Length: 288
Image (tube, rainbow, N blue to C red):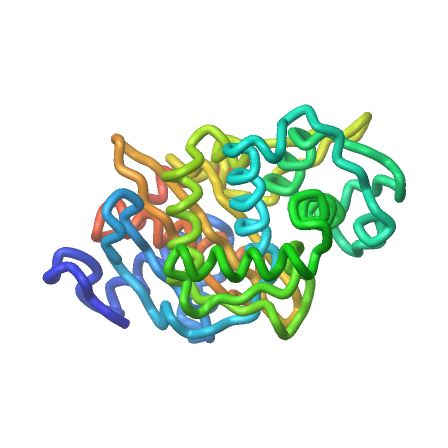
């Protein structure tokens, strides 16, 4: 564990464990789980300055899952900014896109959706089919898009990240670190503030179906307004979150938790540590 701010933040492991217990109880997580040591890599960053407020193994490589879509969206936002992709453009769904497993809108091959709705669905509910459709629309194919993703990662200073696909579905080629995901999250917030609002949508609707945002902290932890969750069996539970209070924004990244509740409690705790430097404020954590 590292202390980066002259003793101002997080003076001891025991102290942060106590904070984690408080946040864990607020989320209904057993106290015993708060003590369990796991291979969880995490970082808390001041979004404006890039100052690392707290970290543990931030540069250790982990498999990527749906956090991959943060880069998919970054490139889509970039394409929109330079006119290559417009909000009301029809986005065709290829056979490859329609066959994507797990979370998807279920649009048949040959179907269409607007770019606007597609980006909303990728940001809020991690739609795999639409991630592939966006990749094909921008680069012509998903493999070509994956190469663009890795190139952009290097431009953003993400030295330990590589991408093999647009969705984050299990692949040995998808790797990242907590530090790199924090850099990407900050880049999205800073460069695309209007597009960033997509991550805070509580629900998205497609035809008659309404689906809730996968982030459980929206509306439960003060100031949280994005950014993305993920899970695969080999990558574990991950969360890149951003929160703002009194004009100050922090970014928290947690990689490799063992359950949704443990992940959410850990992120909530780190948000409190980032803002207060001392202890979790359970009064800020509201149950739905």
